[in-house]
Image 1 (cartoon, one colour):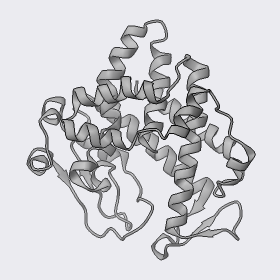
Image 2 (tube, one colour):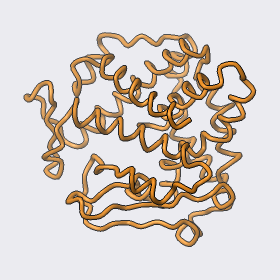
Image 3 (tube, one colour):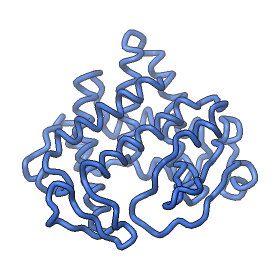
Length: 271
């Protein structure tokens, strides 16, 4: 999932949890969201996703891992000190591939159970597992991933290469975020437009991360003018043309609803 999706899902479930205490919701969001986003954010310092996402090697014989830094360590971290201050391990034998390997959540639990933000970090891991499971079971076969070949499940005549698959997943995630913003607005009354992200997300990242990491993380969350206008005007309906542009599923809305229902349920359990 992209960081905007992680943010929206976490925000919706946190708001439901603290529906009768808005001040506590805002406090919890500012305190916890940076750790929900940390597995992606810290890649800006370590370069690799395998460690922060606990990916097993393709043959299943080894798994990369990371002990995420505490609040105190994170606030003073830098690219130059991350190797010294963050305990992690990078397995060998990863082949170059568009899709990641299986995430081993047990390995995450083993190395991070004592972390003060264990449950917030775990939100990210379980949401990504839900997305990965949706892609592999409902969208494309990854059996030929090392040949850069992905066959669409619902129509075997559609075969994508890695670049095409990346474009399809990006489209799925972008339209999914718009659809999810509608669900958040319906459930909580909040409008997750660019102003909301500037106020609540950027502020939380600056409070918790080193300045360069906060800015580089938020750079990937910035809204285009078109997206911001769409959210501001509450245009959450995905058009037939937009649905048709995502060829990796034959029922975009149903796929999104199932994904968000599953990921939302797991998120609420962690909160």
